[in-house]
Length: 376
Figure 1: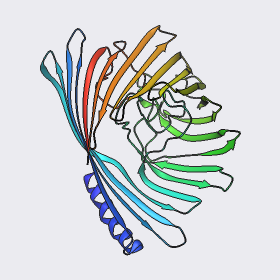
Figure 2 (figure 1 turned 180 degrees about the horizontal axis):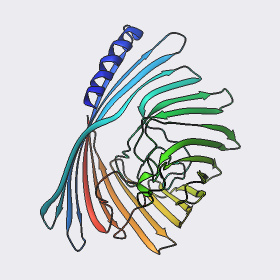
Figure 3 (figure 1 turned 30 degrees about the vertical axis):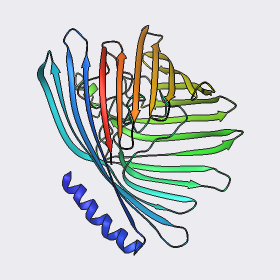
Figure 4 (figure 1 turned 60 degrees about the vertical axis):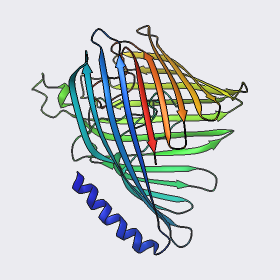
């Protein structure tokens, strides 16, 4: 993988030099973060983590209001997990985070490579979380990208048309429980129009998924590859408070006998900033998943700036089906280069709201976390 990264850099830099001449601009940013955490369970568990994300951006202008830009960034991290003050597990990895190149005109954008693709109206529990795994509570808002080609067209009437095709993404993403079949392409699109004081959109995605891990005990199933189709509608409006909804209908292959033929994801939300002090923003969402099981969540989040340098964020989730509470509180302090976050949480021991690629669920149970982030 490191060879791929080096190859992409070798290819991108000469290409952009040739296209831009003297008008190219190189911008290198770095983010270093340190994280420590302690969980107050029966076995006192702890976490020490270090992460480094360098990001190189190359931008420049072409003739006739056209431009081309590129990004290469790497995610390097090491995590050490402790149980009762003894090292229990550790892992480290360096992997591509973003590697893409984009061609833009005033109305059209084409972006190819490893990139983040996300859209929709909801902000906390998102039915349209198809290609990312962003946790609302994560100060860094980290998520792996997807390999693919994305095209976006913007009309003079503010109509947006998205088309994408993905290839080589063999890990689960979004709400997926099964990875995409190897050497198979995914494709989809989105059509978004302005409506009254906001906008509304419809989206579609198709893929073949590999369910072999679910059919291990059924050897008679020799071809455990089944299709998934995602169809969604969402909208957002400003009527004083902001209001929105998202709905995703997932159609599963009829031959996939271990799963329901259809799954439903719904979010209805609202937010408003009250003119109290520095401005108190409160948002609330109702989320419902219905498949073989059902999950109903209500969420309320509060965001309040304590002057220019400090901020407090609080979120409370309630699961109506299990009667479980999820509580999160964060205090944030910002300087020119540093951001410090002190976080506390009180969740069920088997808490799992968002999908995670980590080997440990560090937000389960009760605990404290501290994160220092340096951007330069």
